Image (tube, rainbow, N blue to C red; front, side):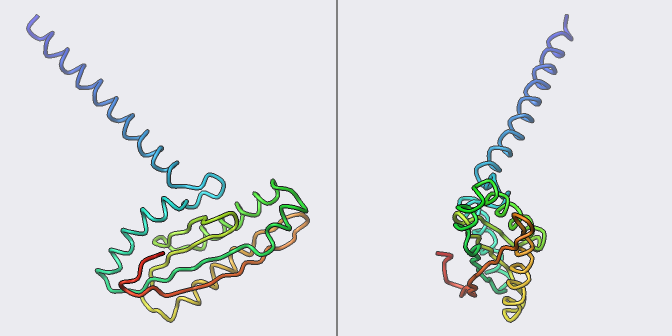
Length: 167
């Protein structure tokens, strides 16, 4: 009888631990869903801004260089209008997949708009920004659709100043 209260407390503690464990993983899943574009598995705008803040703070401490790359799939409306939205979605998924594959672990890739992607890159050397951006653009252009037609991407690249905001 004296140990039954102890066992009851242990059981309740284990139950609370199990509930806390499930809540922890549910929160991680909800956070991921809130920050990720479901079609491309890249960050959405919310996730981009959330993660960019910590990247920019780290960069300010290390005094490196930050580059922002905006890429757009050329003539994407024609792909959607000619081949349908399912093919357009396939192009977006493939382009994003190639970009994610070519990204470094600390690069942030975000689906910014319909067919626009933004990449935030930390660089040791500012002169390497164009090379890194071009490599990522070429990698994304490996996406194919409808009988092996290639997509092309156009982009713009800017080096952010230390006190300059992402916007």
